[in-house]
Image (cartoon, rainbow, N blue to C red; front, side, top):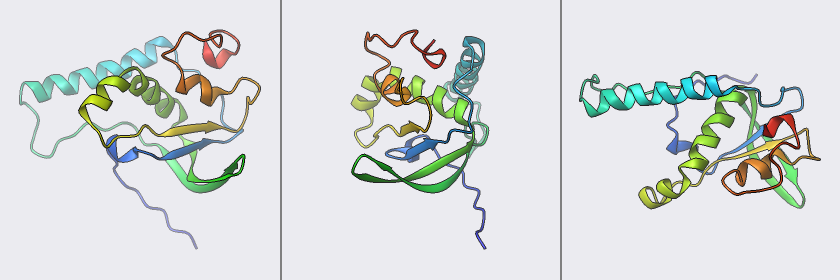
Length: 148
């Protein structure tokens, strides 16, 4: 019988992870308001850090992301990763934020490789490629509701 493990993970500990979004998950639907709320949560925690008003051992924590181990094929490659059961919207929004900060992260943390997200559906739009190249001017912009 499989056991469930609950672990707290830092963003940096997700370095190099591979996430798989199965077809039963809805597409990305967070509005600007929800993304801004996430950023404001980060900002408030950073203010506490700057003011040194955090308690010893206190850290910022996202709502849970529920995953299970999964292996899948990508062309001729076997990928070891995690199927996202719950938390796709948070994980995708965090990915977008990290992509925006990618150059700063590379200059500051030489050990951090951004995680990947592979989507089982919407292959004709290639959501993974869109997210990985979100900082470039590309022709994806409004081809799919997920890109809007």
